Length: 216
Image (cartoon, rainbow, N blue to C red; front, side, top):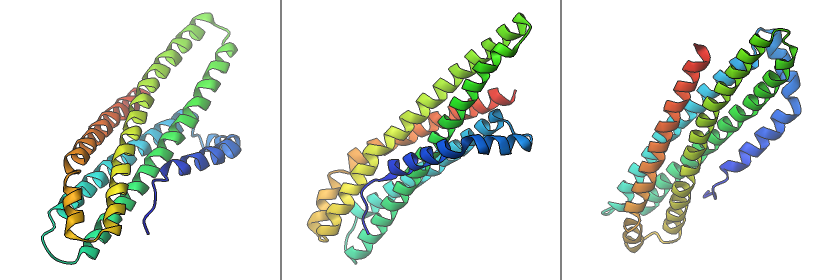
């Protein structure tokens, strides 16, 4: 069944769940020797992998759209089913990306708040200054990472919307004339998908740089 893009709704639910049990979660992880810093790195890795997977899925959806507009006889119902399946898979991948980015943001805010509060616990001023400088640098790198990830996230929206419109149009117009109408949208969808993949690759590069800086 055709679905309107709903991937942002899942991210809201994740935030609610994280907000309700984060303290207990952190205590449990800390009891196993896993600090917020480690959790942040893990979540950045997960967000990076989700973006990589989404890039591949959107590229697959574009290939199917190209195959659809090149249709030259056969079962149009099957063509519609394949395109709709690619759209729904892309929507699911987009939802996963959004949830992973939200999870990164959640733990990062908790980590930075804790770090800033603990600066007051230093008895030596030089160590406090060094830690404050490290906090500032980490926040700056994180800011670049989050900006890149959010740009990549936003780049999915026009592609999903376009695929949704094309799939919906094809659903109600299973004929050769409909295929011709879809063909007129190919250039636009190709441009938007290329931009999406480019933004995803930039975000993945930023994630790798951030992970390396946190592990060094």
